[in-house]
Length: 299
Image (cartoon, rainbow, N blue to C red):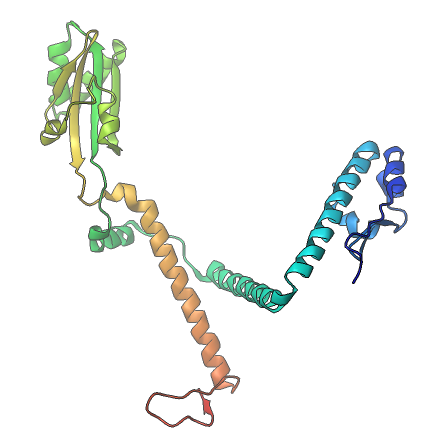
């Protein structure tokens, strides 16, 4: 058995590098360290040294690298001593991991070459309609807008009338008044937000339930000591209802991609199998239930 820790560091070599350029430092293939029966030479380190290091920086890098190498060798030696009885299991796991990596790389090769990553809106919508039951919201979502303006503003009545109107011209007038007077308009009609987030723009109380406000698309109002608020909820998805398609598009794209990816991988496996079987490269010896074992079955 080799000594547990037989270490020899060529410190003088590393230290002398502090005053030399890197090309001279690698002018010979000297031994940098020995540990646990293994040897580290300069040629082993060349590929890991960052480009452009010279002088003191190169010496500092080498000292750190050599120290880590030595510690690694000692730990590996101790691990081999402690776990020598399970060496076959470790070799098996390493081989299984190697095979898994190779197969994953092969699958990725064919996926990259053959999977179409473009998904039409109609394909996404069709999947959504067929699987709505799988996408339930765990909270209430809303679309809407909130207007905050000073209490007592003379335009209050007009603002409420314009905000409630479906006419495009009146909506433009509403936006113009808000902009000219620096009223705070938070427009969330183009995105679904948690109802709790929507309420955070209003002077609400945590102890109070505001679900009653979800029952209408009319303009509603609130007040605090300084401001007047108008708010309008344009659309609602309550807890337990199907999530809106807008929120699910990225998810559905991933699902469709994974489906296409799986199809490509399965198709390639079948092509490999069929070709190998046709060429006589596959032989399967099995015992079918209720039948005599076949001496040799070629598929």
